[in-house]
Length: 336
Image 1 (cartoon, rainbow, N blue to C red):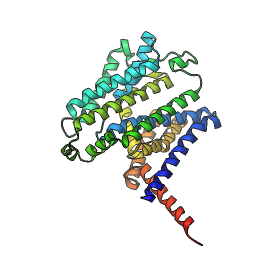
Image 2: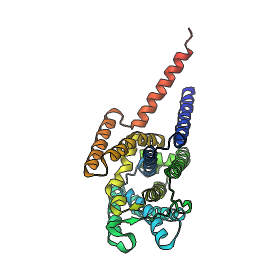
Image 3: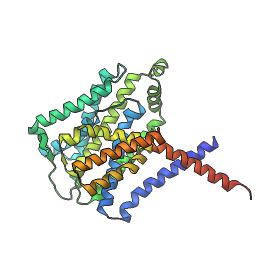
Image 4: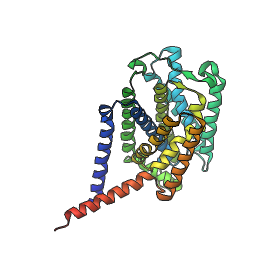
């Protein structure tokens, strides 16, 4: 018991030191490339952690998170362009719409077993993508939407420097981290783990499986829409292929599988994997060659992780980190 407490304390110290280090990087360097890579690293960490609420904790694999991402990107932008509503408010409307869609999809799927949820979410994302191409008068169609540059305008989520975006996504990631950590140790978190491990057993002990699946799906979709809202404000452009393509749905799954089962592992996974991809994107540019290289990297990484660390690289590193600490403590307490 004492060893577990010590390990938990060490992990919490590591988490605190990790976020503290990330927080002071803009003070140490103003390099735009480094800041941009870290912004996208935290962005993908946030996206993967949002997906994991339904995919990891509830055990319901979704291939339709690109739809929630797209709603989060498009709705605040359309409201801003047409009605002058600040994206800070529009992103909450986008989140509510995404959560409603998640409940709508889960209502029939969560009453039955099998791969129905996976197939339905994938189909929904494709329907949304095609719809946003067809209704070009509202969405801009295949040409997408540009967010007009207003200069340094915090009210409208626009900044001339990368540093405000850096701290916004860091705050978003920290907020999601503490929310999910709180859920992990709550009744809701225990119920999700129970239905993930054995849904029939969870029903037998009185857990309302259908209800908690819906809550997990809505929560996951809500936070995913925030990722979309941040993304379009950062790059100021979105189109249906980028926002709602299958690649956008697969990205959080890959990072989640690479990182591991907990939110700490997934954040660590993004910090190990995303900088490599972003650096190669900077070197080679957004070409077809780069897309092939990115797919190759993802494939090789997943193969290695499946062989070396089936439960994710995060769990593997934390286990070895804990063993190393115990070994060092043991050597420290050995009498001369």
